[in-house]
Image 1 (cartoon, rainbow, N blue to C red):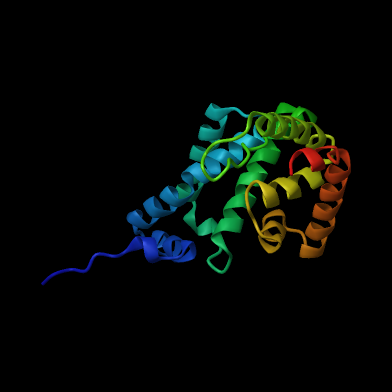
Image 2 (image 1 turned 30 degrees about the horizontal axis):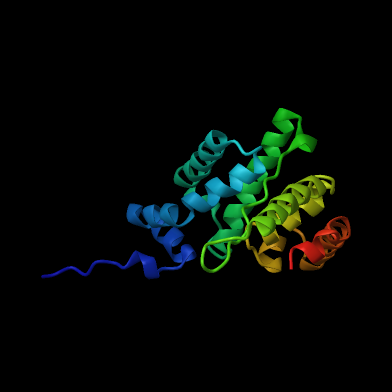
Amino acid sequence: MKLFKKDYEKYTDEDLMRLYTEGDRVAFEQIYARYENYMINFFYRKLWNDRIKAEDFTHDLFTKIIDKPESFDLSRNFKTWLFSVANNMCKNEYKKQEVRKNTGYDVPEGVEAKDGTMLPDKEVDKNNFAAQLKVELNKLNDKHIEVFMLRHFEGLSLNEIAETLEINAGTVKSRLHHATKALAEKLAVFRKTMI
């Protein structure tokens, strides 16, 4: 009798977590493979661009899942739950370090031209913009930074952000609007040079 092998890649995150809570270790390995690098990058940006700390926090995050898989409510979206846990870990670290205002959020690299090349003046403008965006972003209050980062650097939808931060979607929209407007005003000088 030939046994059929499960195609774990076709399972949703929620299905994989259900399988893992039922004792399927391969399901956890698939979850880990899907989110390891994603979470390392998230922690890296949130925790002072410290790669070792980011890797440690990612390890701790997945250890929490291994130790208490039942802490995930199977009726929730796994991705937003994972970000909620990760975000709370960062908040706890900020409190522990007592340097929350000195957090150095890093702006990801810009997108290159389709052929992989970039004109030197455009590259200088891009680098100047990224540096100034980082400066202006850190001038915003924590709530606005958090929403802006989750939306524009982590790619979460408004509803996913609302669920992650445990606030309503209207509050997310308001904070995102405020952050975007403030940054647009401060970075207006780049409008002509970046076109």
